[in-house]
Image (cartoon, rainbow, N blue to C red):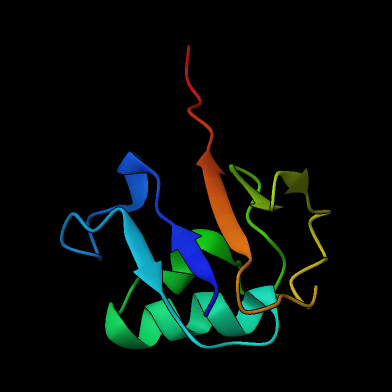
Length: 89
């Protein structure tokens, strides 16, 4: 099953979990599966329009996804990583 690697800034909803193994055929399904286990996680990753949030970058096996690529297919041994950008000045 795909692995979703959770960055430190997004571990509040996951109660500190760094890695969640889920069932899903797309990146969105995997993030939704994490959200089903840990409510509030999905809204950190996707905005109301279903696009990847501005301050989140998603990778599948090291390849960066476009903001509207939530429906990218994943296989059972794929690794989904989230990079949480920090803004401020």
